[in-house]
Length: 129
Image 1 (tube, rainbow, N blue to C red):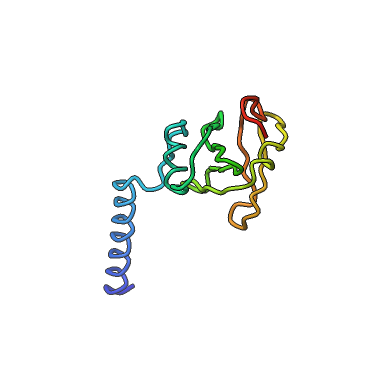
Image 2 (tube, rainbow, N blue to C red; image 1 turned 45 degrees about the vertical axis):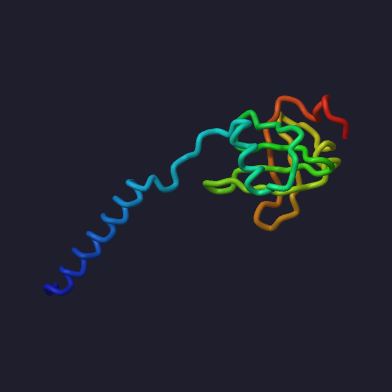
């Protein structure tokens, strides 16, 4: 081994250590707190600013939410370390069956083909389909 090789290895090790330190300092990819209704409404409002939200149902595990906006259902689900929002017809969301405390909604999106939301009860009794 010559001196150039050792210098290159040392510089590479320092660069990796610097990236690890930067990631730790920036808190990159830290787990998010579970969703609550206020945060879910804020995320829906950010992606659908023109929509009026009638009701929001937040998943019992805090990883997703479902909202009604007229004839549309707005679906919020965790994807990676963030959230994705999609819309589907309300009739489709209301017809979803509750199995093992979860409803599965087909989103028909390549990136997120379905959303699984844990709820205590479904469909809601207070809103007509």
